[in-house]
Length: 137
Image (cartoon, rainbow, N blue to C red; front, side):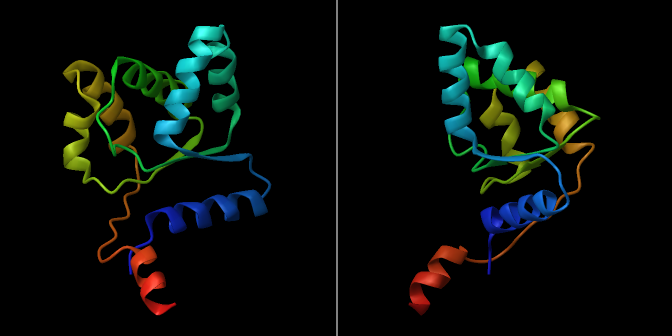
């Protein structure tokens, strides 16, 4: 049984129980919020908030290709947190596809270097947990 989001949320719950500041975001929604923050002048304030979070969970990462804004926002987030805070990235897409999803080679290299090379990977196999739950109800 597969459960990427479930597992990410379980790690988040445990972090909360340990007193760590934790925040869960669906990646595309976070990028949309940051795009609006850029327009209204609160982008840097939002980045500071994300930088202070002990565990940031980015769920459904890479379901769609990144535009320039999303790519830049991801770079800002990862750069600000690198080496100091924890980030969980949950994705249906294999890591080997992330380079193309992020796009813009130089930025993709920088992001993936920080994300992948300092990570602990958990590869889940099998059907979606949602399918199994729906089938059993």
